[in-house]
Image (tube, rainbow, N blue to C red; front, side, top):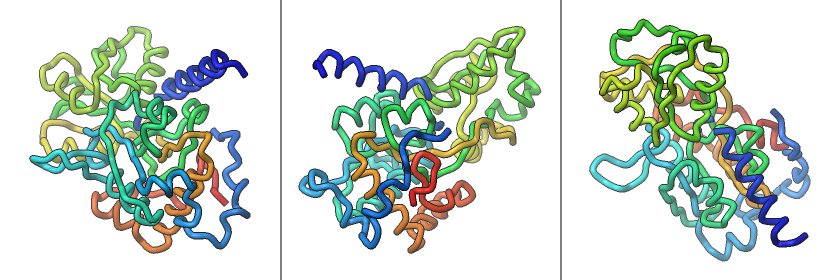
Length: 294
């Protein structure tokens, strides 16, 4: 394979992966294909040699999505479901934990470029993204419509967004929900794209947009903390969020999956979700690309 052809293929995989959009089909990857090789081994046993030598699990996330990933008040210390669960996984692997904040649309390219080992950032497990990565699923959620407190525009469903100005986070699965709805609209909505959910809410505050779509647990927390928004009850395109691992690194994928299995067994997984009030979003069993790992 020529270098040019290799670069072209990798580039195509990245483009395909990013087309799926945050968070948020079955993959060609056989989730249970390495089950025999992992039987009787701990997560620590399964850590690939290159990661073991580094001594650190390098995790990337995109801050600004409470309760999933956020800064502790007044600090630059990352906390939330993803950082806490990432730290618990690193401990099971016998590794130090390092987490980096990065732009959401750069997470998968950075993963493929070797800047970090895994991505934990409320990322929807989609078929498009699986062209480049494998997912260990750990959360279930869908997008919900957020509007100004009191819902002055009387919005009830996605249909009511037609003909209106809506703000959606770039690169997110919620942007994909809005664009899909817009195809059905007789009078098209105007879609503004924000860097993230908090920036989008500023457009609602200023009256530039009447609504946004945000992952349900995140939307509920924003509404509760600020008292400025209403969250409509229906969840759209509900599905799994996953820990992303470069598709070429199946040994690391299986080590992380085993760590999840151990955390589910000893209560560590539930403890993290309980801490942030999102136990209802838990997954049952260990899933890789939505399929049972074993």
